[in-house]
Image (cartoon, rainbow, N blue to C red; front, side, top):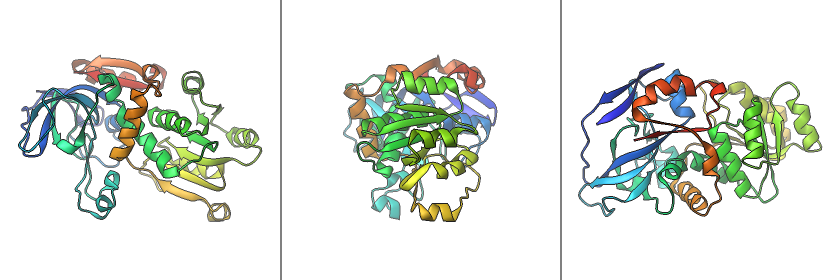
Length: 336
């Protein structure tokens, strides 16, 4: 079978690998769509903190069941989406139902080889029937589920002012889910084109250009109160530290971003606001299902999200282009 291998930063190749066979409790998925996200681009750049090379990338996956191992009940031919987090089921996090932050987690395409390949074997409980949505849509559930999990961590009430910093795919997912939760959503980003997309295609309530005037603009927008919930999806340590100043007194700050750097903040400001600081990692099956239901019911603007696509054979040549901001990629899909 063919697979997309990142040999080292900046070097991708289509390689031949043996087609895997499912063991007991596993299924073989014929991958049909794979979304490209910031994680894949960070791997290509060499800036991801949890990865060893070489690695077959890809974790936003949809396809069909091609073969099942002993003990599996799912039917061959069933269209599915893949939950790409391989959890141990026994650690302290898993025992509490937080499989998204398992102590021994293996994320497809990061800790273990991923799904930008014609076939992949995964445990049966890592696939879910995707009836009622398209293969394109099913491949986008994962990155939107990350947004759903961040919002569940923040626990907003209807009418909360929610600031999402960073209008890449993960930030966009947070905005979509924040609106579905009844939030009044503001997008903050440096790029005018991304802000225009959030305003025109996602219907966010306000957009603000990041920079030296952002603090004053956000203050004016909220009559000096700032935001009940701030979600950072930038992957930039400077932006993550600046975001502390945007949280209202009694508010909540959620880091979806992950960076290699150390994050610091002024304790007096943090303390006097009684800020709740939360990390948000990956997503749980409940988050995936929430997104699937919303997508199936027409509440997710998936047609607006897919801006680029290519067959697997062209992927090595597309990454150097898609990584450039001027390309205007929101969500790129690889077709197999």
